[in-house]
Image 1 (cartoon, rainbow, N blue to C red):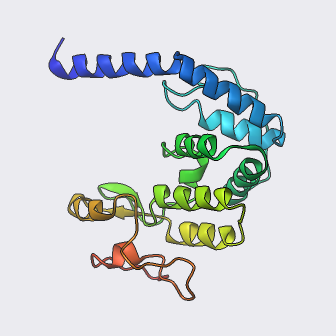
Image 2: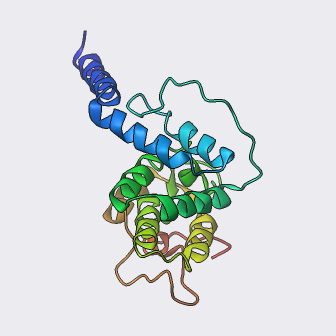
Length: 203
């Protein structure tokens, strides 16, 4: 077995160990208690998004699909409403982090892909930035600016970037440029990209 395969095997073993750990079992139990307060489609969405990786608590579970009329943005709002009413902040922070790691999860997909793929798709407003703001809202029990945050996130979307631009953007890997205030009037949601010379028709 070559070095790469050995490394992958060790990583796979660690992911399985994490999923089978007592910590993950406790986390899953807390999630199930939370979901007793959730609408069926919201509970399904959370479970589905927590089985996308081997290390996740619902990986391998059979989950009965529940149809939903909610948009991805509305589903995120439902997540926040559920957490603000029925969750501790430490648990909330971990859950939202787990729900925003993979491209096929609702929180990441809420920023639509726009354009033609180059090297990779890149969230103009980093998903981690949005999640942190949502955690702050839940902590302070104030979601009055949630609509604007999610509007900007979706408007900016995911854009195709070259390998060279991707390297430049690592300066703001999970944040926005200094001084960027998303609550301000006429805020530029593309500021992170425009700093490096990227522009879009709808900006």
